[in-house]
Length: 142
Length: 248
Image 1 (cartoon, each protein chain N blue to C red):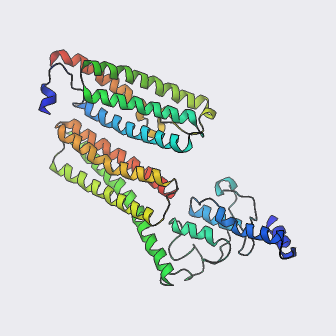
Image 2 (spheres, each protein chain N blue to C red):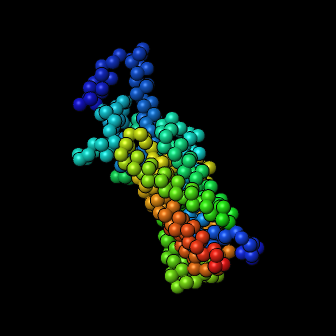
């Protein structure tokens, strides 16, 4: 721990609330990646769009988790961009699944704004953006 | 009704030739039925074939949910006999049928001790029943852990030794569940929604709490407690899904 904290110039992003974020993102990575991998491997033809979107979600979650764990200003910015992209993705896909259910014979991770995952997919980027912005404002002080 | 017509056809049909083949095909039909998802459906599926000795569906296949609002007629033939035996047996191995025979079936027909087969069936059902108990127990324990750690977080405290003992207990439950699940799979049981998903969820529910526990070891603030509480909630959700996956 001490090593991470004393490292100069690299904002630690997994301290405090960041830890909870990393854990939840980790859960989403496991959920989305394993789910899409299984579905693409076994029944891709049933709902190609839905499974591809799940895989994309998994990759985005994986990248955000990595940047959060790594820490630092660049990672923080990258994570911010990805969280914004994730939020846009959740809202787009969520609306899409509601407007045109026929395009989705099976659910994606982001279907109905992530209802199958307790709405974590839509709440997570909001919290993460809030946390990442606060991490910047705190940095000069530390 | 179609059933009477079928029976009439069969009675009138001369033995041998294409009719023999047709009769054999119908005899096999119960075996081709997809695995029933529940006791009610298993019963309805068995009932669809009419009384034992009548081969082929008496009615077009309907799930009970589709047949609503009328009740699904489900004749109850003697256990272990007739053309529907395979369907009922499958319901039995899936832990859907109660031990000792079919609901309301002939008493004592499949009672324990009527041979090694019956005993084996009962033993297998006991392991399946163990999983049925373990899933809700683990889920409730996970929720209790979540509440406990949530309380610690509310009081601005990190996780302490007692919390870690609690996490160990929940992890132990999940481990036992994992072992029982694998034993059931090794005995040839098949989860309703597929073996791969079942195993993935078993592993996930085992790893869930320990992962958060290690993270809270490093984070000696209230946020460590929050993370463990979140892991408890996630585990409870996993248990609900696991229950669905197992039951079909």
